[in-house]
Length: 112
Ligand code: 5GP
Ligand code: ZN
Image (cartoon, rainbow, N blue to C red; front, side, top):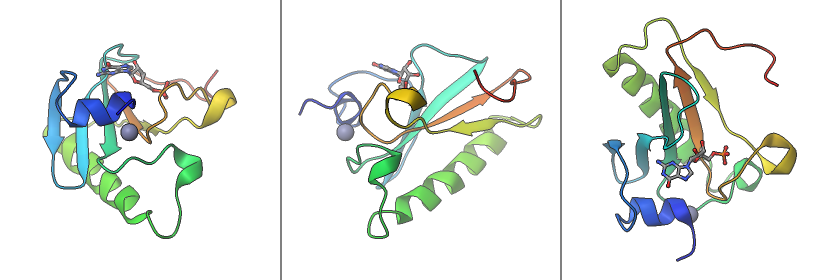
């Protein structure tokens, strides 16, 4: 298994876990870009946003529901941003679909 996030899900690489169910895993980013920065990922290996299909897309809705629940639990009352980078120009560095959740400061728009 050469996927970093699959290895994190399997517990082979330690992570600061926030949430887990049969389909979804959430953990804090190792290099936070905001006071709160965590990642929410499907347990099933999907290489990125460009690999989402009608067949595998149900987990994406579930991930957004998990994000809303965690945001409430973590008290992100001022708002947050969900980001999913895709490909080289999108800034994707890990080839396992992931949703960044960033909060705790005013985030600029548009992104750089
Ligand atoms: P991307 O750049 O693909 O959108 O996001 C990958 C994210 O994974 C980055 O924000 C990076 O800091 C994070 N990351 C990379 N390696 C690890 C790791 O070993 N553990 C954790 N918790 N996050 C990681
Ligand atoms: Zn993977």
